[in-house]
Length: 79
Image (cartoon, rainbow, N blue to C red; front, side, top):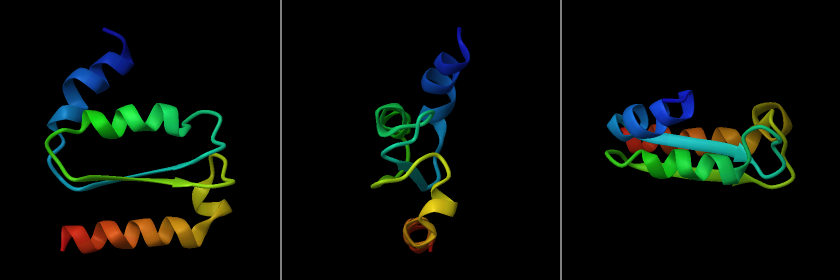
């Protein structure tokens, strides 16, 4: 198995805590097309996916308010 197979087949489906997947629409290494299957593979939990417009890989630096808002929503869901 590849590292990606291990993640997708074995690890991600067993995550059972709320998750926030955050990515930039212009991220060269983790774009939405890569992150959506990651979010979808977490079948035992509540996942929200936030795609930040006009954002590269460093979303917390490029758009801190939007990242903070997504993380605050995660904290609210965790309770």
